[in-house]
Image (tube, rainbow, N blue to C red):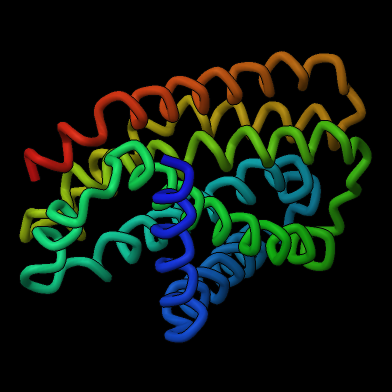
Length: 222
């Protein structure tokens, strides 16, 4: 399973490194979202400061939609999906590989966005340990859920519009938890943030578990 996961993740990441389509779209899009929110709220600097965690995670979530759609779009050519099914790759390994590739792209994106909120919004990273834990837990939850819902819509012509409709409601608790944990870290209320971080970790574990158990069935249905 792990060998298949490395194979799939390596394939997807090599495609992205060579084409520069995924990161080339995600990073400018996410930075543009931050800039536009900054322009809209800058007259009231206090509101912008309080809204920084929410705006950050909204930018991450919207960019994750691009990463998920791109992850399955590279295999949408005729015959590719059938070839992967016939290759003998473990479905759980296939899920882990897709999940790992999306998560790696989200990590790069978040590093850029952290610099963006510090420069554009003047954010003070007061609780770095909680912020890192929140980012890891949220990334696992977003990438695993995105991979699950991405494969559900992969075989449909309307997948580009269906993925956001499926994924955004499912990730609403993740957005809430990540925002609250980040707010606690930035405000110095570290203790409150760890509870929200635990909620994020729970969602991540659940989505990864569902993926390992049911990804093969979902793949066959598509």
